[in-house]
Length: 481
Image 1 (cartoon, helix red, strand yellow):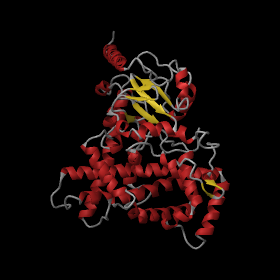
Image 2: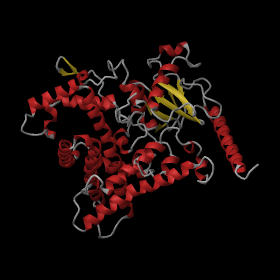
Image 3: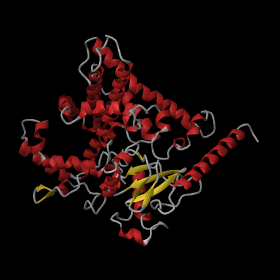
Image 4: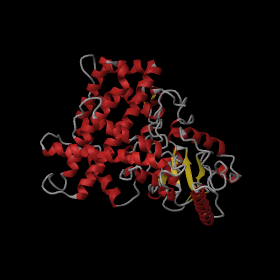
């Protein structure tokens, strides 16, 4: 046996032993009188780890919800009396880790909203730590640091304060229109630049130089790591944490080199724009920003520093900057695609603008309530091509029971936003972009499920869910299938 084969054998033996022990412990924990939710049959030890694709998982989960909801060996006649439609909840196993997927709006709200005290924790992610994103509040478990960052974000982004950022948003929108008029074929790079520049100004008070601005580039590179590494099942080190200590040269350990590069880019996002913002502020060249506001809460820059406050300011600003432009970019891509594919919607939107705004000025934030069709377009963009197709994973903090099913403590729980937004029982012809679905007899129809109530996730954390560049976002707007 070669020198390479010896460590391979030891790692394989350790992995098998770990998984067998986990399976044994889990088997002793499950109550015998309650079944787990139905789902695809797991393989020994691996569970469903080899069954899950690494792209467009929301579509696979939507199909599994329909396929296995009524075919599990546990699905008996008594289940037919449940209010939960078949397929609204199913279960898979990843290397012994139970994963519960919720595909119906009522089920998702019952568990993730109404029982949020149990379901709002996060997975203690080995991968997030390896790639340098464990400072992100959306990936943190409950604790003092999480509460501190969440409080700071709420103070700066609640309904009463977001109006302070409208001038930056309007300026960015006007700049984008100018660029589009000058070079309409360059709209994708221009979208990235103007959204990045707007968030950069809000978070750090930094004025972007041009489309090749170094700080915009830092943000774009940094979000690539979590978008790839945090895909469910992409890296087995998430469920076999001892693999974190396998050296990069070891066969099959290429993830170590990738993680090291992603860690470097995450640290650049966290530290580099912040350094520039503080230097500008000390020199009198900076403007008010999220970073400076957090810093000045407890002390004056240059008059003695608090390491804790500086770390908080870095985290809050990086959370805002790292994902703000990314998620907005995805939604605007959807808008452009919809206007190109559905010209009738574009004509109706233009007619409303002509009637309400007129030809002599551009819309302002104050016009929002007077533009119901534009409002419907925004909602339909969020529904038709979700930014957060699976949201962020929740972690169950204690054993739970739901309508005859057992959900074990430590389960990862996902709300399939895509399945909810494309449920034909909720939205007629869900694959069609149709802003008119929100109106009835010319008036707003409040009976239609509002996509903003679930588009950003569920539970206590849904308002900060957009703080992470999610791996489950639908980034390929040209191929929604």
